[in-house]
Image 1 (tube, rainbow, N blue to C red):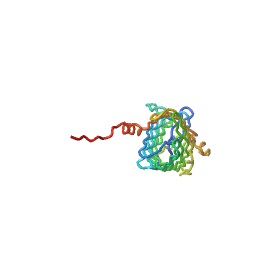
Image 2 (image 1 turned 90 degrees about the vertical axis):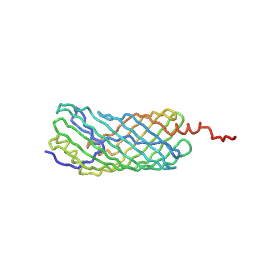
Image 3 (image 1 turned 135 degrees about the vertical axis):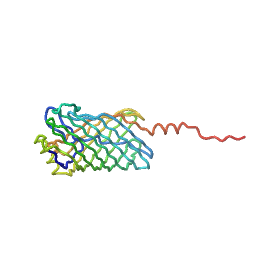
Image 4 (image 1 turned 30 degrees about the vertical axis):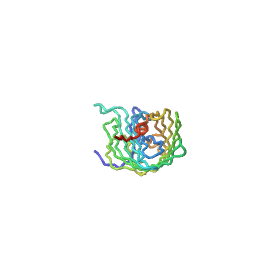
Length: 258
């Protein structure tokens, strides 16, 4: 028998032999280094936590001075499905958009503030034929800072979240501990909590390699199956570097006279 159960989740992934499941994992907190109008950043990389992994992509564009738009996509899984009904696996995704403002400090620092909305879906198989299929949303506010030199850079950001369910289906035949965890999360949703993200990178314009750590700051959620942290590595491209270099090298127009 199936019953619709409201559930808040950003990403949920089941663990393997431990018969436990994660019900939230933070994606990377992006801290784009923005200095002027038309700055454009794009990145792609790997991200993972305890027994789950996947990839994420991000893009940021400044259409006006001091203003920017941000896009993030996060997709992870634990194990791959097969024909074995006892196989435990899970997969989830999150896509979000944000509008923000930034303020360049000197030539090597950028402060930013983004507000956005994200939504996605998560599917879990619990190994006994029981599954859950859930849809969720997240609203967030994120201040951040990025310091960038010629060869290295460092960033930090805090994200204030409001997580809430949209809809979902859960088999009542799943393990009682997992069903209780789902119901306990449902009872306290929407959940307000903060996350902290750090990034350290090296390279040179227009290509950077970044290492990221993302932390869930609300300890009371850890016992409810919320992952404490994720870590990742990504490559970021400063796309505006290419067309600005082309414009700088373009010869000035000359006038022919006869």
